[in-house]
Image (tube, rainbow, N blue to C red; front, side, top):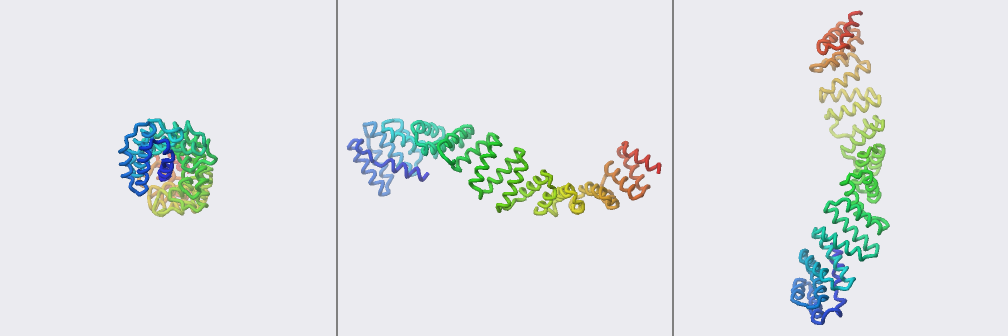
Amino acid sequence: MRYLLLLMTALSLPLNAAELSRYVALKVHKAFQVQQEESTAEAIGILEGIEPERAYDQAYLQKLLGVFYWQLEQGSQAEKALSRAVTLNALDKEQHLDTQRMLADIQLYQQNFIAAIDNYHAVIEQTKEPTKLAGYWLRVAQAYYFLEHWHDVLASVSAYKQNVRTPAISALKLQLAAELSLEQWERAVKTTQQLRRREPEQKEWWRQLYSLLLRTDHNREALAVVQQMERAGFVLTQTEIKTLAGLYADQKLPAQAAEYYTRLKGLETDAEMLATQARYWQQAREWDKSLLIWKKATEVDSQYRWPYARLLLQQNQYQQAITQLNLIDNPSEQVLLTKVQAYYRLNRLELAKKAANRAYRVAQNKAAREWLDYLDSL
């Protein structure tokens, strides 16, 4: 708000003292002398001791009091004084407009948002200069932002943009906040892209962009953003590495996904992450790598013996598959039938029959019965 203080002080100098009554003008002049000697409180005392009769004198004094109160950081008093000055409506058009703008600025600072918006709108109606209009509309947007009136934020930012060539970053942030709150995801993507172009060094815009692209099912574009983000020198978090790996897998690039998992901290002791990496290697048909990771996963958590055993069976490593299957507690019918298949492949028919009988006792399904009939026929 420093700009506000300087601007109010400049606008409040007694350049129009000729319009004041002589008595008031002399008092105002004395108040300014005292204020310039860094005794603003004493200057306020002088002004408050004046009892003017003319409306212009009253309005001018209230405006000046508003400035001095603000210099003393007495926001409420400043707001009251400027409100009285505006209500009197006795200043000339330019002074009145400046006073109402000051009032709106202080009300915004004081979080009196509704009143601030009303005063800004009154000022906007009397203003034609694009630069000033842009500033007023931006502050209106800020007030609506604090009120969480999101549609009004967007309307105000739109009016602001009509008066500038290049919107300020603060305006784009307000627009993005409103679009996110209103779940206008596609529009939020475009706004975030603008912010990323303007502030490429800010990681938050890269993160926001790929998150929105994922939300809007633009996974290929999200992958490109995370790739660019890393090439731009940003260090990926563990979550971002997982996200990137998932995006590679989504784009049918499981080998790249698996490679990224090697960068995760604590991978060797996290069975779930190991299992995910093993699946990626399996999708990439990197069987040896997948088997190695599945083995590590089972060493951390035995629940992964089943997918490990299935891949061993698929790769014709039947004895290793049986070893894993035998370690599974309370085996299901599916596990037992897989054991039947492994024993059969090893030509260990009696063990295959035992496994088939056990599977039939567990579920009494058609597959187990067919295995028993087939093995009995051999």
